[in-house]
Image (cartoon, rainbow, N blue to C red; front, side, top):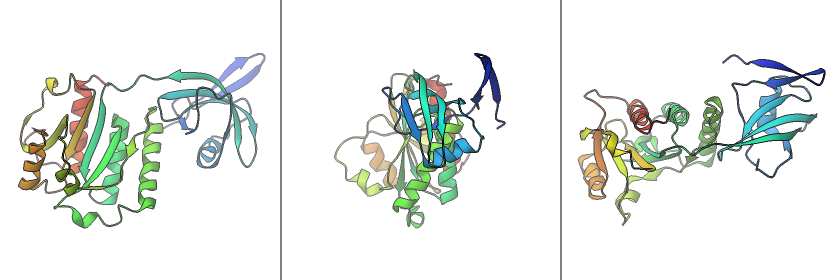
Length: 259
């Protein structure tokens, strides 16, 4: 995406606004902050734009708050910025939690990136009978940190202000052995009925459960149904896990008019 540099004439000098179509992530920003130091990775992202003193940019803390910042000090270790304005964003009309059968790493990364751009707020990978071969390594902390960086990048790229949560992979047996029902949950299945707007219009939080390549087994589907999860389909065509998940996410956000 082309970076826009807009010069604003103020008090006889030019003050540059860095990238109006780009947002930065500063995790610890709060409403009380007036002066903040930006270190490490996000400092490097700012440096790519070759900023100058008094340059302005928008940052988010990933918790719904945006901050208009002005650079007041620059050195090799950090940028010091002054917070000029705080903007509080409305919560999404739907808190969407995506459970999905893990696949190959590249597909996993692509899915969470695109789903973040579309407004998903929580991810939980599922280990089922048909995808156990992909489970190895997904429990490592380094893997999760990599995925979290992907989510941060997707949030910034789409100019969103809420950072999704990524949970550690969960074995299907964990859901099976859980005593409580799974409220407001929908499972993608060819045996399900078509989606209807009334499925979501009164809900503020939904769980979308998508199986791995090859789908859930009949036994797994029965377990989910016994826990009050509802079956829904998204058409007559066979889609890959990541494609099916994004199609369903798109449909749900459309129903909630989140666009």
